[in-house]
Length: 430
Image (cartoon, rainbow, N blue to C red; front, side):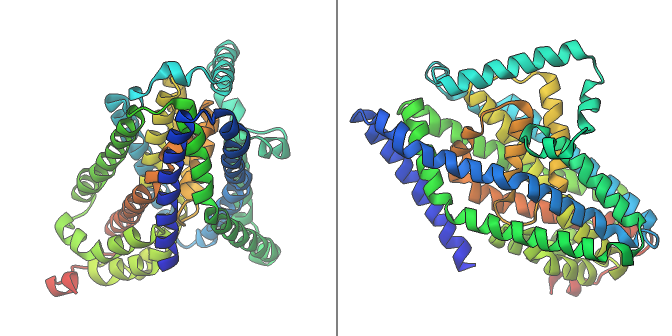
């Protein structure tokens, strides 16, 4: 835990130093030096995130789908689980989009200074051209584009991530349908690949403070030294936090009240230690053993349900992460003066939902998934620098939502299957 906290403070320090350097560079006319020698380091960091996006989604998603190998025994439970997870994710993304479109946190920027950069103009022109092309191709072209003709070509372009996700799901389903003796080596291979990619994520995150410094230094020089950036960042953080709190204190209580007899206060008492651990570690995977123990011993979920629903949820259920991705994507688009139409915002819903299925349950994975969402709607990934400074705190909060969502779905599924017992007051508080 010390290592994670230390990295968090390093990222904060990198953010502060990057902003201070950008302000100093603007005053001392170091713009050219910053663009030539500092900003490229940030670009390298973003490229590293893009580098692991495809293998991370592919390996993690195949591993998650293949874990349904006991679906013959729990087919009914599996169907309910996946359906509820996907519905709750869509709800979370929709809430995020509604909030960010109402609050408009990115509208506080000096759009005139932003639009002057050639890179942003080029990205905007490509977006407009792509939008016009889609209009000419017909209303079902979006569905056609999901199915790849060449998976290797799709994997080479983050904008085709939906095709990679489609192939990974197809691959995983085929593994489930085959006898275990034929796919045991393949399972081991992808489990190993997944572990290796997660280790690479840890390695890349070590360089995060330096990447954040370079990205923010370059952005402050490009944007200008105005207070609007910090005001917009505060509004963005508040928008994400309001959305996450709404999920915990409104959406999940509503779901429990409709589909179970469990009182949310009792549920909250039972799951609160797992929530606190999720907040501390920013990792659904690290919290999983505690989540399972609390659901079984303190909420009354049967072991059969919890052992299936909760590990699957740690892989495919990322309500908090999906909500954050929706807010962050639109916020960055607003900051770069890019107007997203209804079709592009629906793309965010679909992309964030499917990308969350392959999101690793580790700190920082949500940022990698955001690269996918931004690529799908044609928004410059350089805008990631705007939100890196506050990402750790938001990561902690959205992990709490992820874990709470997992426990909620487990409780709903157990209740629908008659596999939930009443819990005494002393069990809730212990």
